[in-house]
Length: 292
Image 1 (cartoon, rainbow, N blue to C red):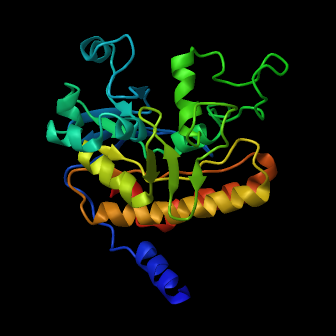
Image 2: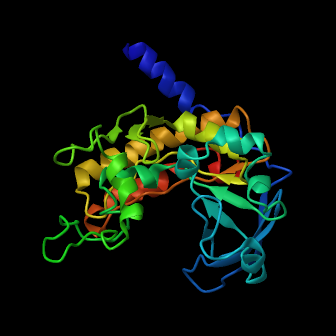
């Protein structure tokens, strides 16, 4: 068993030499000349157009920006739109999107770039029933306690319901069931907030889903720690994220298509500075994952 695990770890962390991509690159237009500054202005070149950096990326959870159609958003300067893989996994499913010609065609945004995430943030949010979903938030309190410190407790019931179902065990009768979001080395399991079926997300499966969706930029699976996580569990989470990123990158390199994978950098608060430094160092030990 140990030998098999060691071989799997070696295969996940051994990568081919990095080479530039002819369909994706980042152009530096200006770099700050101020001492100690690393600020820069650039331009991302993707298969579906360019993105000025730094820039504002609009989130269209299920492939649509709420209350704004694509034409109005484009006219306002929306260059890059972000969609959530896990929510699209729940419905309509990556296979349905792929059968429709991919996410660009499915949502009618064929001449502008898209980015999809891995689902790591949603797993964290589901695990805490939406109560600690924003970095920097204090530890959430139960709804009704001191007015309720839940960041999402003020949302209407349909919006809150998905967090309850994703973390539920089975029955709707009786008291709230215990959480059922399970995170292991293999990935995370949770219950669909749409139909109640159990779903599993792994570094490999989220990349395959993002391949089916077809966004220009895809993200490896990460294990998101809470804002107030102590040093020991934070280090464990950062280490797991590095292992998951390596497995995600390995899956991506097996079928690159015209997509670039961006790495995820995790850290903690000032009290966990050492773990934060390791978080910044981890992705750079890979062969330029942001350009693969």
